[in-house]
Image (cartoon, rainbow, N blue to C red):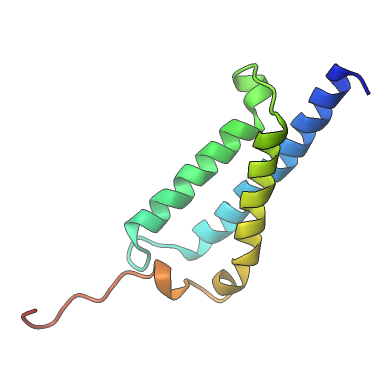
Length: 106
């Protein structure tokens, strides 16, 4: 395999992993709302979605080819999101919910 073929394969693998990351973020966006979800959780998933989009399209947007470490990081992050999908399937997990407002003095 020559260098150009290797770059194309790494780019394809990175695009696939980043597409999976984007899909996971979109699925989680579907169950989030500003009334029920903490703002930092929404911000984190928005940043992850933007970074995955930029990384997946890096050869076109920035003329930058992904390396093994970039693909590995995308695959690892995707594995973390997929392993946590069970909690998100039925709605927001407890750590993502906004806290109830206190009713009395602290």
